[in-house]
Image 1 (cartoon, helix red, strand yellow):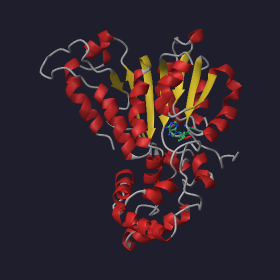
Image 2 (cartoon, rainbow, N blue to C red):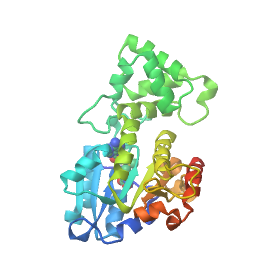
Image 3 (cartoon, helix red, strand yellow):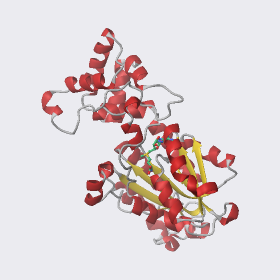
Image 4 (cartoon, rainbow, N blue to C red):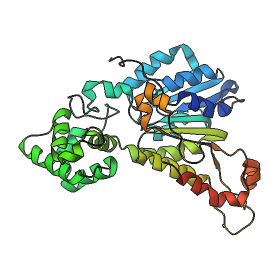
Length: 353
Ligand SMILES: C[S@@+](CC[C@H](N)C(=O)[O-])C[C@H]1O[C@@H](n2cnc3c(N)ncnc32)[C@H](O)[C@@H]1O
């Protein structure tokens, strides 16, 4: 097993702990009166370890689709004994994972999306454009299609769409054409060759701005290989649906597409679904979520980014499931007039970066 290089520093750790604490520090419904914390992206277990240390009455259900990451976090967390349940699963499988563990509801959920430092460091996984490796990019190496298969089989329109939509790449069509030309000669099998092809397809002035020219193409392929956005679109509502009243979800996203899905999923439940012209909220139409990160997403401080470059692109959003039907009907109990919430909530979230 490859040891992670250097120390993996969990992003926005103190703020995540602060946001999760009220949901975890209370009498729980799990056996032994414990509260349940789900880490949907356990990775190397940095956030999970800190939560277990801060909340001795909390159990962890830790998911990851990467078996190597789970092996590392297993070792790191073994001292917490029966408080730890690590499961090899994709995060949209959370309801099934919980039912297998005999758990119905949870108190706190964290998603720290994207790739881990372990995945980036392991040269043979093909995530990093800076290292030469086979073009794999699967987070779960036990199943699925590799980046190599995509690069060598997708049509020009399909490749262009992937690069444009998931990589927000302006030169998507040119890069796709270069890939098709190259693979007519021989299959593209290495990350270094792909990175070089991308660099050569981009006009020289554009190569000098916006970081490494292959960064957006590699991000796009990784998202396609792992079905990241469709999985995320299913996973977030599923996590909200298993929250105990008062339970909280915290999400750390690293690109705008994930953050947009997060923002929209939260906003949809943080506003009234009742008629806008009624002065009072009708039963069952009030907001079910309270936004905890108001005025858009929170970002890392300059000091944190200096310590941990991975934090540079993070956008954090968090919500709480509103406690009870009374509070839902009467917005005043959750800190705002009921009908104003219907109009204001979407604007709150639209300010996000
Ligand atoms: C940024 S790392 C998490 C780091 C972790 N918070 C820590 O402190 O060590 C993201 C992890 O999420 C996992 N992951 C990404 N997408 C996933 C999915 N759809 N289902 C389950 N795990 C996923 C990756 O394999 C990776 O290990």
